[in-house]
Image (cartoon, rainbow, N blue to C red; front, side, top):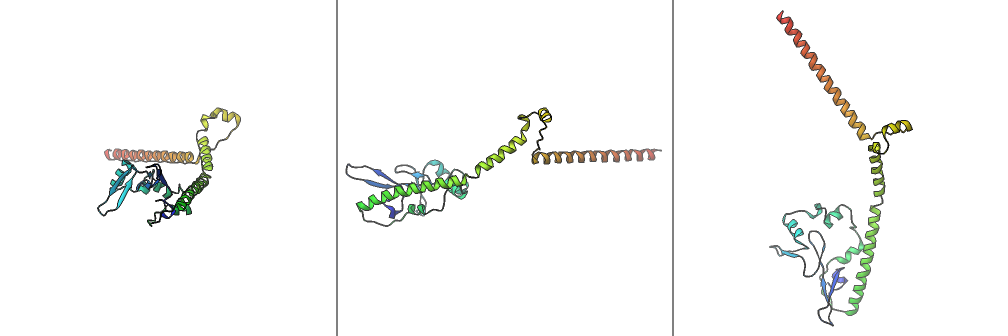
Length: 213
């Protein structure tokens, strides 16, 4: 596409002749949505004449294995589905393909290229803001995990004897308390079953002695 009416936000300038400028379209990979520059990638045409473009053989093989891009973690589709990247924004409307023939106009070309650069700057800034907003709660999660790790491995920091002399009371983690409770319950059940077996064995021996007498 050569201008915004064609809907492409990326173009490549190639100087074929000294006084000529050729504008070519940068395609998107069907599987991972990576950019495909002219002369690169793989083109697959299905029997119904639908064209699929892939940036590399890795994406082509995953497509032939019938894998869903939304379930493969390294694709753009997965990141958008998981909420890791900006999905809804007005700047994405300019990237839609619109196959309308437009008469060449130098002023329109210049204005379109300037608008494309400005739109790309706005999109990058909004994506950075979205990432900062998404990472806001990450520090709290990391702090919570660090505290849990310290509670779990406090013996590596302060020895039990030193804790007693200093009077430091450290509450064990809830998971550890539950595990100890389950272990004690299991041991109590094992002892109860052993006592029941011993009692039944003693009763059987007494019955055998009475029968022999």
